[in-house]
Amino acid sequence: MENPSSRKQNNRKLLYRYAGLAFQMMATLGLGVFAGYKLDQHIGWRFPIFLLIFSFIALAIILWQIIKDTRRHD
Image 1: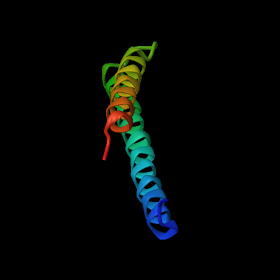
Image 2: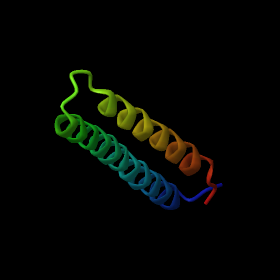
Image 3: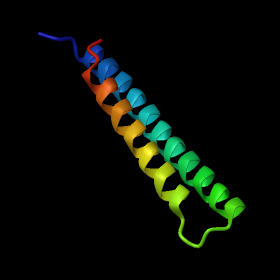
């Protein structure tokens, strides 16, 4: 049977790991949206194509990161 203090420690490690992953997700998506928005402003097109493209690329990177981190066994 597992010791309750070691179980708490494992839960705390998971919490920190997934909290860090959530921050990475927000930062990646924010960076993609910001870069796409600025590029669309610079080019001057009415349709925000780079905003959409960079947002989807950021989402793909986020999904890849989630899959990679959750499949890892410590």
